[in-house]
Length: 128
Image 1 (cartoon, rainbow, N blue to C red):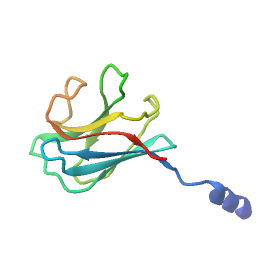
Image 2: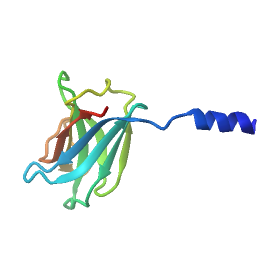
Image 3: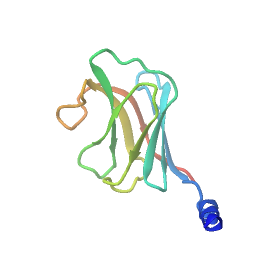
Image 4: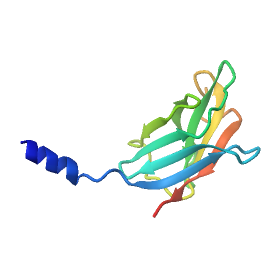
């Protein structure tokens, strides 16, 4: 049993990153976050620096494909903390897909669409 388990663990390759995004501040193009997506249909949002969020506000993570009617919320993010999202309910990722973090009131957007200012934004690039 130990041998079978060892072989199973060794034969599984780690998830391969298939898309990358550098989210930059629109005002000065300073990079603030990196988005990595892998074949396991998981997105990981990684902070590059600590971003201050005013009291009573939160960062909300969004994505939108070129052919989608509206952006989709991927959840609320804590400043300076990595965040992982399974993509089970979204279409497959695509090149040029938009990702952004907006500043929203605590609890997130009340409309289901971004309402606050864009803090960081970027587009997906396929990694070969």
